[in-house]
Image (cartoon, rainbow, N blue to C red; front, top):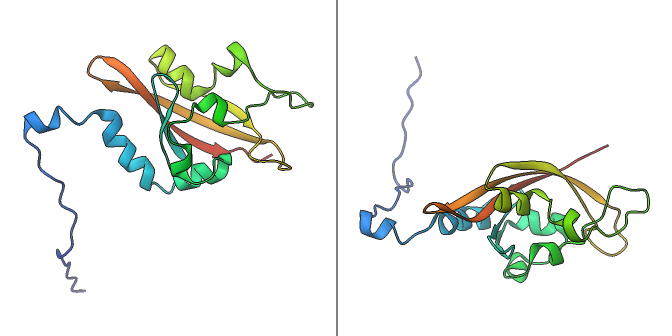
Length: 153
């Protein structure tokens, strides 16, 4: 029989909050801290489509520069969205509004779909599988949390 010892020094202990303190921290704020430190490609937008948080791997994947540089930018203009045709034309207007992060906000439901972007000048188009969930502030949608995964052909 093996003997195993576990050290509790340096263990993670969640910060206790009183109910009055907890009501001032929104779901979006709680998730933003997690996303900013996440290794997975993910991002948060607010209800108007502004980027509130982006993981370093997501920022690199999408060609957004440093994560802090992407904050406050409108997602639909920060990304170079393209269509699925062979010409890879710009995706604009109503079609651009249907990408999962924006659709989750508008529909107030989970959204999943493919997105195609040009991550940078001279780089090939990138197809992404996106899964987005709305984030609530009380009873209303305050934004969305999206996880992205490159699609390999």
